[in-house]
Image (tube, rainbow, N blue to C red):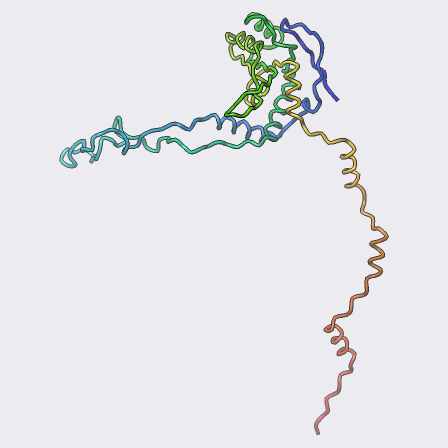
Length: 288
């Protein structure tokens, strides 16, 4: 099954429709999974480079500020103490070790798919044929947003082009922006809160904070390929449900095995107890 979404050009004219996979439309995820993913993303952005000086590190004289006794004031030992201006900071931040939070790739894809699916269900995903323009034109993008969106924090997603790039003597394929993407990005510079990303570079946080997603048809196809939600065929599910519902039936072979099993020999203790019960009790002889 698939859903049809309208496709527009940059003049905000409807030019056709695009089928969106049902798996992406109905994608959902546990709210805790999405929260953990977003928290990990934001934590990994931090540099952990904040550094403050304690009282032993600040540049101050070690001489006492005033005599210990005689002045009626509290005793002080150093101007580097935290209560003095320019003194050291108590329990201030220090550079920490690597605080990177590992993100499971399956959870990452599931979270992004759920966020994109929510945008589709709310009608906040707009498909464009392309961002092709001869020169940067902010007015074209502005009119497009005014006619199709509410103008609050749009995110433009372009399709990625992969090129072979040499890195440290080895060739690797990397996503690169094309010229039309550069023109589109320049057209967004004067529009507040508008962002442009390649679909391969966008994160779940970008999708979450954006109010509207404007995506090209090619970028949508790339997104569907990457965010494939596992769909079990109906035959497999039917077999599993039938196996659960069907009552367990004893087979003929199991019954034969039970019949062929020899009867267990009685235990020695039980036999001895039965023999003692069967014997009549001898009457005690009366002594004269």
